[in-house]
Image 1 (cartoon, rainbow, N blue to C red):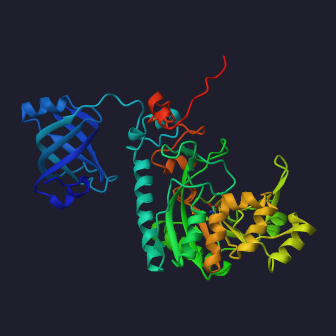
Image 2 (image 1 turned 90 degrees about the vertical axis):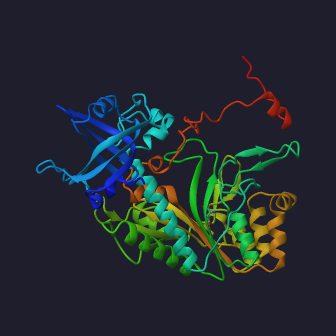
Image 3 (image 1 turned 180 degrees about the horizontal axis):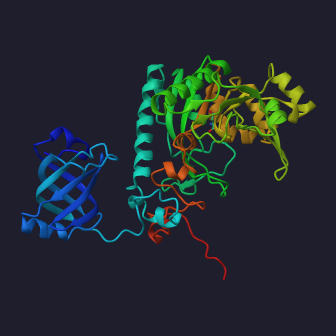
Length: 468
Ligand code: ASP
């Protein structure tokens, strides 16, 4: 039975079997040493001088070949221990070597951080890049944290619901990715910019507490450190308040840091809360960096920014747009109050919207939602939609709200950014297994790519050739 490299110390004196990748090979006179790497780390394997045939086979070994070794786990000779390795007191004296596969020389070194390697090359060979210890650690701790998220929210009585990927446009301020429908010629699905409408409909459905680790898709021009698809921890609650949502969010962050990053210090608990106005006046930013000591990489400056403006003027489109999204509750009493305040000055209206900020980055945002159908319709119209457009785009929401909708609200936390900050990484691509380039290309798979004429025909799509 195979054991892991980390287990060789507890198997001292026993016959063991290791399997993995050859790291380095060192020839020392008559002996050959290799570092064998598996998911737990590395183990030193020594091929003794006595077995000529075995030694000859071991001589062929090159980095990244995949092998199985059988042998005896033993203490290393005195003075040969490696204190840097948890199992550095031991090694395996091989008696059998099986070579599964050979490997070409890798396009780059995988021992270091990789940050010095051309990123396009790293992305093209991501499966090799992921072998490096830093990325192994990032992806593995991401997996553990995802497990923790499920545990934390399930314990708090949240229901995990998977919402559709093939869907209809939800306004989150970006362009939609469209998927043509074969069965409904000329019609398109859009990939969700977020599960916003579904999570609200789940509140109408009586779920009361929903969460999802949700993939979101936004077709934006390259803007900073973003990805066309990204992951959110998405939450929604019924009969709730700003206070409850922010307190829960804070409790989650504190528990997460305590469990996985005990060496990190949260600058202030309870997290500071500022209104948007205060943040802008005091820091000139709606995502202020509230760390006490910004050179201290172990400090986490969490904060909440609340009371954002409801509307912003979209000069290009000559209309008012929601700063967060149109489902956000404005600070008004009712629809009449809304109409009066909107006439008086949309730019002065506030929303029951909040952002979660960490070390100067926006890591999440949410709001209390509008649950009165007439107010929702008024907001859509205020944003420049004609009544028939409102019906066409959002009729399903307005209709659902006619059947008994609880007051509700929620938040979404951007997990990629959160993991990057917690892992001390310079960008979110370092914590995403298969990231895309700034211009949306997957260099490993070669996507996006042209498709067969037959596929296009089935989809009733014709490609217009670029005029030369
Ligand atoms: N759907 C929002 C977003 O993706 C989050 C929320 O309002 O809950 O930013």
